[in-house]
Length: 507
Image (tube, rainbow, N blue to C red; front, top):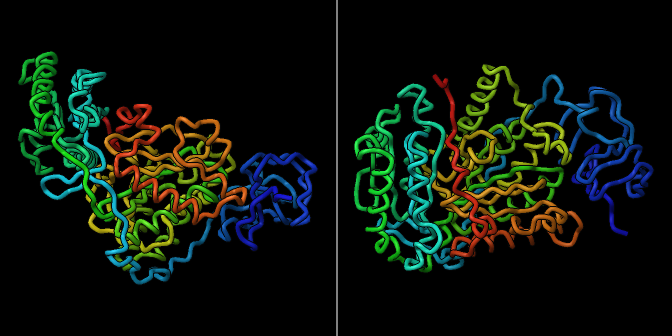
């Protein structure tokens, strides 16, 4: 008889329901009778837990009992919380290992687009970027001119995409907020998945186009076209000029072909959103297994969402290749603690209503599952939001946990594919980088087949191992990098999800 639950470690005080367990359900393997109805993906106590006692899952503390919990009781927000304090042992670098790259002749390859400067793309878009929200409509009007059959004569171009945002003015002209915005726009303008870029400014905004080009070391050319609405003569004139310039360069952007290149040119942004109780059990560790494979083949993975590693950052610090890199990670955690305190918030507010409905109770539980996306490989560097990735291997990029903002930063840093695990059902896309959706459970995969690319649910039922699904994900990454469309691309999702991180006062 198939088990009704998953036990992640022998020392855990809870197990996770594989299906809804009505009150009275007997779990003979652990000699427990469910006292409550336990929803799918939720936790049931395997032993008595006293008030104030730590609750363990993954053999890690995920919270503390807020009142006495009996064996068989549902363990969730009604009887478990963060507690006053929690300790993490920061044994820096203790789990770092020597590099395990495969011999070059054994490494995987894919069919990529090699740019003139040697950078490798997984897609071939033309981007229409904006300095400020005031030029957003103009950018979208430009992209609209290339919908439908407009690009039929240019089959090697994936599309013309407008990436607008709500920032660029109403704040300080220099400082952290503006640095982040410029770094993000600059990262997209330089991204290899764009064969050409038009950047549209208004003219009077704080984020002056000339300053953006200067700071980001960008220069006007036939494939980087800066336009200022107030100088060109208004919205209609700017749209007309941008469309004309794009039409001129279509043949050049189309003149590409895919060729065999090593997997070391793949940089995957790791995301999880609309997580549930299965995320840290199926999809996240399977993605982690794929990351371990990618790194062995010379590739790069970018873990982010700093508030969603809170309480599990010590596990990453253990894998840092130097104490300095571990220190950079811990410094970002401290920044976030101070940042949330200034706004009257707290780090445990991160789990969303959907997360809680799916069985996640505290940020500790969510974070311990989230870091599983990073596999077991060494942490080789930590960068700020949108900064270029300096090394191959596993890198951490500081960002909020809000998925569109986090993934936008990863693409600005150079990610050319996004792998996104979801338990409740995210529909995220991320042009110009293709986004693979990994369902944590089979019910979700079957319910949202048009959005989900890979089903990780068989791990929960014992029909497949983490390593087997990890291999499936790795092969899907190679196929996607070679041009195979993802479900979000087939649906046309990804133009409106561009969301640079906004910090600082809006004045």
